Amino acid sequence: QVQLVESGGGLVQAGDSLRLSCAASGRTFSRYAMGWFRRAPGKEREFVARIDWSGVRTFYRDSVKGRFTISRDNAKNMVYLQMNRLKPEDTAVYYCAATGVNDDWVYWGQGTQVTVSS
Image (cartoon, rainbow, N blue to C red):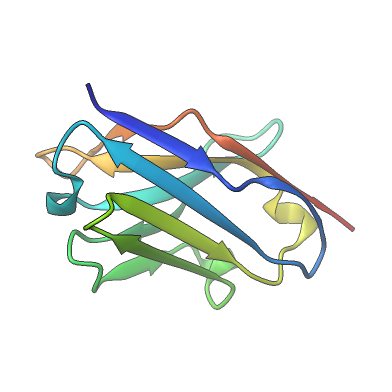
């Protein structure tokens, strides 16, 4: 059974940093793209970052470019999201996701809360 488990969320102040981790199990995730999404209170879930299977190509939503960095360690089946210079508008539940064979987002974690106070 495929499982994605996030960790590393918490309550921080604006300008602080956090590193989210996602532990993947149940299949060979090194063959597929992985990403991070978030859902803020009262808003729809939105894309944050994506990394291809090799870790070479990354994509970010505009509002986090230059502040967030996605990375992966295929040997450990781990994906990370380093978040620097956090802003109150980054407050959300952050979800780890993995693609399926059609490159669609199929697998999801349970989420980890990130709260940034001003």
